[in-house]
Image 1 (tube, rainbow, N blue to C red):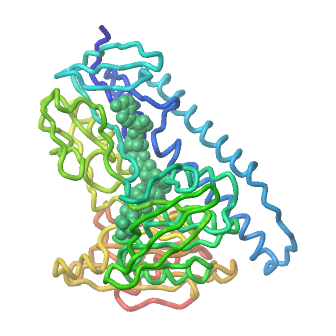
Image 2: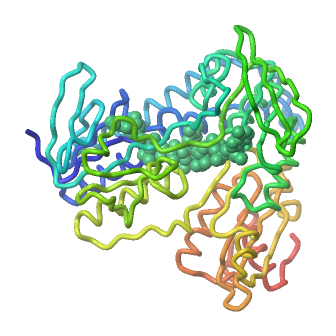
Image 3: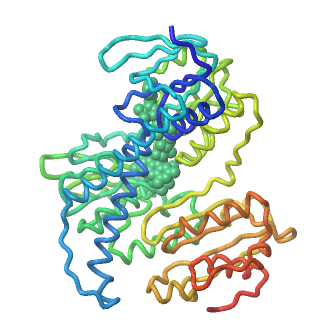
Amino acid sequence: MAQYDVVIIGGGPAGYNGAIRAGQLGLSVAVVEKRETLGGTCLNVGCMPSKALLHASEMFELANKDFATLGIEVTPTLNLPQMMKQKAESVTALTKGIEFLFKKNKADWIKGMGRIAGPGKVEVTGPDGSVTVLETKNIVIATGSEPSGLPGVVVDNKRIVDSTGALSLPEVPGSLIVIGAGIIGLELGSVWRRLGAQVTVVEFLDRITPGMDAETAKTFQRSLTKQGMAFKLGAKVTGAKASKTGVTLTVEPVAGGEIETLTADYVLLAIGRRPYTDGLGLETVGIVPDKRGFIETDHFKTSAPGVWAIGDAIHGPMLAHKAEEDSVAVIELIAGKYAHVDYNLVPSVVYTYPEVAWVGKTEEQLKEAGVAYKAGKFPFTANSRAKINHETEGFAKVLADATTDEILGVHIIGPQAGELIGEYCVAMAFRAASEDIARTVHPHPTRSEAGRQAAMGVEGWTMQA
Ligand code: FAD
Ligand code: NAI
């Protein structure tokens, strides 16, 4: 029977980063993964393929609409199979990269479905049906999440698709209805709109992207609407009927009112994700997930001794970089080191055009907590780099404690916002004051100057470029 210090169930960002860290710290480690490739949701059907399509479709739209402004006359033609092929090639290169890192760090990949079979035991059913039992001092659950379902809407991944189906549609839909104005809906909705689909987003709440700073979300919705995305807010889908050629949806206003029928070539259901722990044998060690399916933990320890849980399967933002942080922390704790993850400093990025990125608290959260804060805001219309690039949408906003000036939250909407937020993640990790950023020299002309100007705005000394 194979014996390990750590067996991780799940080879996504939580699992593979943990395995690499374990190898680096000299722990013997195996990862049980049922997919044919490592990398989990993120690399196979999440972050990576979606970003590949977002990039390619953005280039297509730029060439279609914006190159002419720069004096470049082109008439692009879409080659969808090639766009999908380059996406698949990037994904393969990345998943192979993880395999290489496993070898380099002496982490074993055990292919198959893992099931906890009592304390210190993981049973693996391989692709050929053979069963192996691994003995281990520590079990780490890193089984991730799956798309949430909606009663009355059956995902067939033909006409009614989830995020995985939406990454591989065989054609550009004439029309696409997205259920859920969250990150998946807006990212993948943007991809297909850019390629030519009429996209309508149906959202239960009266706003888009819950969790995003409300002022930023309003600007974001305005921008997406200007690009041609339609929104039906405060509306719930009560049923969907798919045929060979399309889908008919029944939609009802949340506040009550007339039922409406909408039709589209395709429907994307994207109303959130839930933890995936099917067939995991949690009962063999007495773990009972909470009502929403999350495994409850205290510093990654579950209620069962020697069983830990990380990533999307536990509470906290369902993001790859959060899963990665969890994984490093859990392995360091297992190795007897100190480890901690500050979930307040986990940044979020929506990779649309414009991008939206934030870290720390929103204005609404600060108001609700009764924290006195000052805000500094700077529009990209006044940023010289944005101006010369003809990309002036959006702003940077810095929220700082009114007494101490510590930065409490940063919200950026504009091209490359995801690249700009990293500076503030570091600053906030060091508990910087807004003045620290305001008095730091930034290169000119760059978009990062808008982030600095927003910090200057906290004390009211913003300069217009
Ligand atoms: P997963 O990545 O879900 O990995 C879990 C793995 O465990 C899976 O491979 C699964 O096959 C395996 N598994 C489960 N049960 C068993 C079992 N019993 N035995 C063996 N194997 C098992 N996050 C970002 O930060 N940035 C993004 O840009 C981003 N884009 C996304 C786009 C889409 C379309 C989606 C769906 C998600 C996106 N996410 C993004 C979220 C990100 O993918 C997840 O937060 C991340 O993958 C979670 O990592 P994880 O390791 O916890 O779980
Ligand atoms: P989400 O939680 O971001 O958004 C779901 C949306 O659906 C919400 O606006 C919610 O109000 C709405 N909704 C819920 N029930 C509904 C209903 N019955 N009818 C209409 N609307 C309804 O979930 P999403 O977009 O599915 O993404 C799941 C997770 O994946 C994200 O929370 C995020 O953690 C991760 N992700 C991260 C990305 C990134 O970091 N760029 C990209 C894609 C996904």
